[in-house]
Image (cartoon, rainbow, N blue to C red; front, side, top):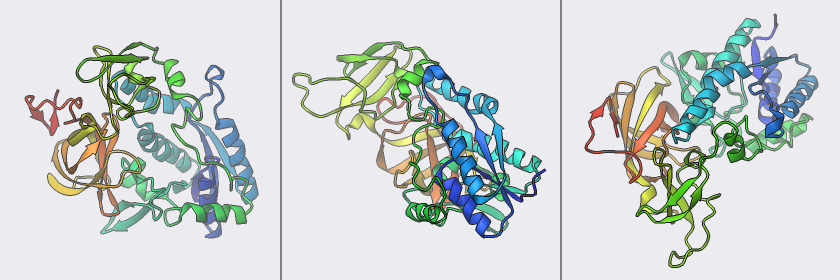
Length: 379
C-alpha cells in the first residue's frame, strides 16, 4: 500500500515529469504510475512505450519517488480501440484521446491509485481546475498554445474532484526550463504527437492491419473520376496529403482536398481549394453529450465552440434536446468532421461537449427533409 496521497501519471515525457517535480516541491506525498495502454506488435514496427517506460523510471529515480507499473492494454482495447475501429469502419474520424481520458486516465487509473491508498491523481495535462459554489470547473490552461481542455471535456465532477493539473498555470518554455534546472532526463525530450498507440508509424499502414484496403474512385462533386483511393475510411474531411492527384488539364494549380465520403458506394469526393464551399458548414448535429457541471446551461444558449483541437473558439448558439443538440455558428466552419468532438466554452470555462454526427455542408449528411429527433437531424 502506497504512503503517497497523490499518484502522478508518469508518461515518460517532460510534462508529467515536471508535474511530479512541482508537487514534490510543494511537499505533497507522491508516487508515480506508468500506464501501458498498448501491447506492442513487432509486425507494425516500433512503439515508443518501452522508451517512455525507461524515461519514467529514470525521472522517478531522480526525484526519489516510487514508480508503479500497470498494464491497462485490455481495458484500452475494450473501451477505446474497439470504438476507434468501429468509427473508422463507418467512414468517420474518431478522437480516441477524448475516450482514453474519460475511460482510462481518469477512471481506470484513478481506481488503481485509490487501490494503492491515494486520494487523488495528477497528470501533466495543460488545463486548470477550480471550484465555484460547490461545483468543480474545468478551465483553459494559461498557455493557449498547449491548452488541452478540448480533450478533457468529457470529465465529470467525480474525476475533477480527485485530479490535479500542476501545469495549468505555466507556459511550455517554463516547464522545460524547470526540467532542465532540476536535471530531469526528459527536459529536452520531443513532445509526442498523433495517436498514442500509433506513435511515429504510418497511419494508413497501421489502420490497414485492422481494416483491409478497399480501393475505389476519387470523384469530383459533379462525378468526374480524378484518381483512386485505397479505402474511404483511411481519409478525413479537409485532408490534402496522400491523395496522389497530379496535375490535370484545365484543373488549375489549386491543391485537392477531401470533401466527402460515400461509404456504401465506396466513393471519395475531392475538390480543389482550401476554402471551397464543399467544406463549409454553419450547422452541426452532435450526440453523446457530456457536461462538466453534470447538466447543460439550459435548453438553448449562446457560447463558443471548437470542432477541432487548437481551433480558435467560434461563436454559436446551442439547442439541446435530450442527449443531443444542434449547433448553429455565427460564421461558416471548415471541415466539420463526423466522429470528432464539438466542445463548448463560456470564456475560459469548458462547459462540456459531444460527438459530431453530421453538418449542413454539401456532403455533411444534413437532410433538411428528415425529421429532427432529440436535436439530431437524421439523414
